[in-house]
Every structure is written in structure tokens, then in C-alpha cells.
Image (cartoon, rainbow, N blue to C red; front, top):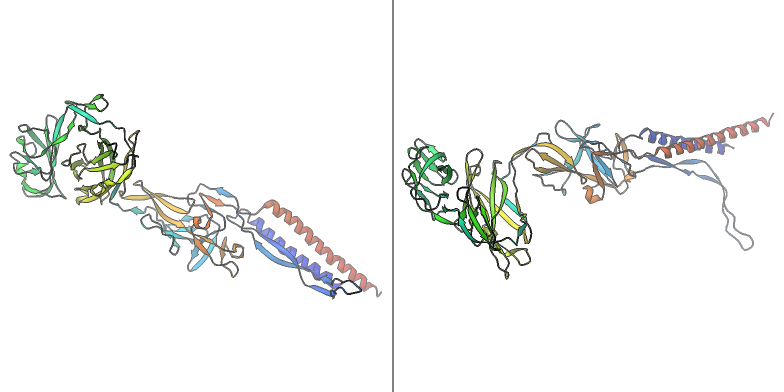
Length: 567
């Protein structure tokens, strides 16, 4: 008689435990990243009255006679199923889907969570704000992530500065028009005098000793009087100024409204000889006549093209036998982050059906070997000198870049005034093609000006990207994800945190992509509690509890009847 009472009691206890779990599930229906639990029951030991017997020759076998002694809680399972994702619009929130957890730390203790309601604290630490636990991941070095090392605290400070980075390469891509027409004849316009180390321009008195290694003057001008409109650069000491490659002397001459810039990269000069406003300077000797003809408003140039058409232009420089130059611009940065706009010209100079077309890449529209220098007049009035030998770039007959017949090794720009030092910049032309159509070639340089972090964003792989005031987007860190063989075996520690247990397995910490999980930025994972299911379980649990209470009640009445038999 007493066995039924104990069975009823065990049923009451088991259903009470199940009700506790249901209550906890419902209480956490709005807890971010909460994982619900369930209770499973199993019968306890049974009392055997008669054991089973095997079949014999004259009689069959008999089953055992056993009386169960009640029920018990077999397990309380943690259900690690994904929940719905709720968009929050907060850029530091992240939601996780799949078999994974975020990794957070407090001191030397490591915890795991599905709660992605993270934010940055006053020191730039990426934390779980409710508890202050540090979110773990990998920090980037100069925008480069290495996720093979140990994880660490993610720290991205507000107002973080980015150092200026000098440009080292200008990369050109897209297409040059293979059907570009070539120039068969040129009329009108003027030609220029080119200056090089072998053909220096010498000015007459009062600057007779001044040899200028860069600059342009009208061709055949041996008698015009130029006015010195400005002098800058160089190193001044008393009444002398010394020019150098790093700090050239820049002299601007004017004549009839036109301005000519000459740059001396060597020599020492008396400032009394280069007084602004002097009107006795004459072009005397030196230089080499350019093969290109330049058009102007006063003296336009007329071009006859290979298809027989003609056109008149009031600007630009053009060479017989070559195409109209394709002008590209790229902003390159010096070591202080100053931007210099570099013009590079692409001119088709050789047409051969057998070997493919050849284009010349140069700093000026002139494609001759003497046209090695260009001048950038900066906004602050300074002058930057560029030096590069024109290079030949051949394309195959199928329009591909012909790496076997190119002079990329010569594609070096020398910024002679960039941050007061010489700076070499390589031109990468390997991504260019040459098909019939439009000229879509463009150049983009690496490097950047100095900047300040203004905002961050997180992508689906957990990479935190910083956006800087200089326009650069750079990887700052990547969020680490932990995966367990048996996530349901983790131990709950409160505050939506878990720790490893003896049956969870050890954490495999990798990136989200490595583990096949998905991160949703600006969103949070909701609780996976199913209210309808919990309410149904609540009713079932209530009925089970009531039924077990009836066992105790009826057993008590039966005992009372047994006791009353003595009366």
C-alpha cells in the first residue's frame, strides 16, 4: 500500500521540477539569446515479485512481475536551437545563428554567450555592457587581420588616428581603345623646348649662370623678354639661394599673359639677380624641341586623323604617328599625407597586326625619350617635380597585356618635392586590356592622408571595419566564435553566460566563416522560448501533478479503510 504513496510523491516532485523549468522558460521569453530547457522523465527502480522464466518442453515462458516505484527526472536538456533575429539598428549589436557562441572574458575566466548586445565602453573596449565582460577576437595590424593566433580583448578607441601612408604603387585597370585613330598630320599650334640633364635650358642675363633642369618655353624664342613673376623654394642664406633635388628653386616667368615655370635642382644663386619683376631675362640656349605640337586659344592645332577626318583643338599636345593621348589622374600621397595629383598619358604609338599594338605611358603628351619631367603646381604655391622615362606597353593581338614585351621596370615616378624627400612610385599596368570600344582606363594609388576614426561597422563575418575621415575603410578587429561538440552540455552561470563542463567538449575558437555560422549585424537573437508550447506543457504538467496528488489521496483513503477494519 505504501508503494503507491511513494510513487505519487515522486510524480509530484518530478512535475514540480518540470513546472519550475517551464516557469523559467516563460520568465526569459524576452531574454536576448536565451535558450530554453525541457524536462524528460524516466521510471525509477521496480520491485520484482517474480522473475521471468524461460520456455520449457511442456510449458511456455513467463514474463517477470514487477511493480514500479515511481518516476524521476531523467534530464533537463538545454535546447540550443536558433531563435528569430530582431533588427535593432544599433551598429554594435550582433546576432548569431548556427552552432556557435561568442567568447567573453572577465579576468582569467572565459565565458560563452549568445547575447550579442555589445557596445564600446569609455576606453574603447568592446564589452557585454550588463556585466562588463570583454568580447574576444583578433585585432588587426594596419588593417591586416591574422586569425591564426590567440584571441584577445577587442579594443577600438573613439577618435583613433590613422597615420599618413606614402603611396608606393599606382595601379591602372580597365580598357584602352584598340580602335583609337592615329594622327597623320598636324598644322598650327606651337612646340615646346624640353629640358633634361643632357639638354639643360640656360637663361640669359641677369641669370646667365642659371641652368634649369625642368621647364618649358616657346620654341625658337631667343629674343623675347620675360618677367620673373615669382621665386620660391631652395635654401636661403643671406643674399644667396641654393637649389637641391629635395628643395629646388622654382622660377615663374611670364610673357604676354602666359606663365612658364622653370625649376633649378642644383646650384647656388644670388637673390639680387633673381628679383621679382626683373624684365631682362631671355631664353638663351639649351633644351630640345618637343616632337609634340601644343594647341592654344591664340594658336589652335589642327589634326588630320588616320580615317581622313580633321579636328581643331585649342588645348593639349599631339604627335604625328600617335593617337590623341588618353589622360588619367591619380592622387598619390607623400610621407606626410599630402596629396599630389599625377597626370599620366597613354598614347598609342605603334600599330602592328603581327605583334599587337604598343602604347607609350608618359608624364607629358610628348612620347619622346627627352620628355621625362612634369611639374605639379600645388594649391599652396609650391611645386612638385615628377620624373619618369616614357615606357612602352604592348598588348597581344587578343587584347591582353603582353608581360613579355613591357617595360614595367622603368615605370617609376620620382616625387622630388614630396614631404621634402624623393619618393619612388611604381606603375602597375598588368590589369590593362586593349579592346575596341571606349577608353575606360583609370589609375588608383595606395597610400592615404592622415585621418581620424569616425564610425565603425560590422559585417556578416564579424569583421569590425573602421571608417576614417580621410575616406579610408580599414579592418580593425574580428569577433571570435566558439563551437562545442555538445553545446547542450555547457554549464549555465547566469547573466546569459555559459562555461565549459565535463560533457560539453572543449571550445573550438575560429571565425564565423570557418565554423559555418552566420552573424547578422545590427540585430539581436531573440529567446527561443515557444510560448504556445510552454503553455501546452504547463497544462500537461498541471494535469500530471493533479493526477499524482490523487494517487496520494486515494492511497490515504485506502489506508484509512484498512485501519478502520479493526473497529
